[in-house]
Image (cartoon, rainbow, N blue to C red; front, side, top):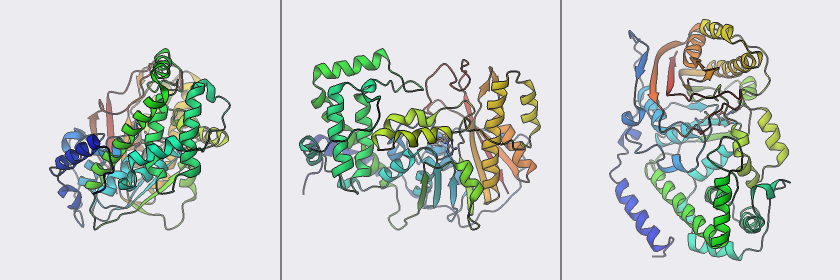
Length: 450
Ligand SMILES: C[S@@+](CC[C@H](N)C(=O)[O-])C[C@H]1O[C@@H](n2cnc3c(N)ncnc32)[C@H](O)[C@@H]1O
């Protein structure tokens, strides 16, 4: 048999597959055809839960394709699995209008459910394409050999490249990204993109631990050490590791799929969901909406993804335009938020720029979700953090629950989970307000039903 992976990796992959035999796929294949509707009579509508514990059929938060890319504030796949296990039928069609790295769609896919994913960030498309690609196309040794010999050259058209990478790194990166853009086969590209992006980060002065693009002494030291130790050999070694990691992640993920069932994931990446929601075709209908909207404590996803987007070929102008549409920065028209709690908290915010941020956040997110809610037949699940404004915690979950209850939805329950494993930015300051941040200790999942 032809050997695809270096011998150590092949042993690891075989070991991994052996371990996977123990992971049961049964929970993914046993959704009911219908669900009984029973009104809930709970004393309290808040319920503590540990999604990780309740959905052990996904063995870890970074399992398989869920760990391909470190997307900020992604939610854990077990949270989506929990909602599907409790509320979906085997025919539910799901939409996530703020899909980020695609956790909702990738989880739904495991259950054989069709999904539609929207996000402003074009990375979504690349992550989904990679997750569903055929890992056997990645012949690591041969590919590394081809890359080292390639004569192609391509660099992003961005004047500030030398601020982020030393000259020798740009020479090397120009070559490997030249292969990606100019020579690689269309079926190989999705598989190459993720390992290339991850290995490219190693050569950058950007500090991946920081919220915004920024150089740090630690990142500069890392690059200088690589330059001393031999940039090229260290880079290719890292790239080889990243390729093997990608193969392993895809094998893990795809092992759980039902070969007899090929659900659809429809992706609209690089789109503004607040605009899409306003011009939905008449027949746009879904059974469930599962989403984690942007945070009131804005994360600046586009800005953080900027270097990766440049390498993937997105022009500076496109990235600038996308950043302007990011919620809650985008200027929006007032929208009526039907929540007494919303009004109560608005009255307590003294500073006008904070009040504007608060209003714009709720105008834009509530409007987008309200427009979409008209097309949802069954369940909406909103996974929100408890952001703070001037140190005061804003009960985002209560505000959305009140708003949709006023529109005729039934607030079934709010699950509360601790978020220690969620990938968050590590920053002391909220970039939107410049104010010291008290990070959210819990995540609240609001379940609304027709
Ligand atoms: C909390 S994240 C979602 C993370 C996702 N649940 C995951 O698991 O990766 C919120 C997302 O909203 C997106 N977003 C912000 N403004 C948007 C807009 N105007 N249109 C569409 N998406 C937007 C951001 O790009 C980000 O990916």
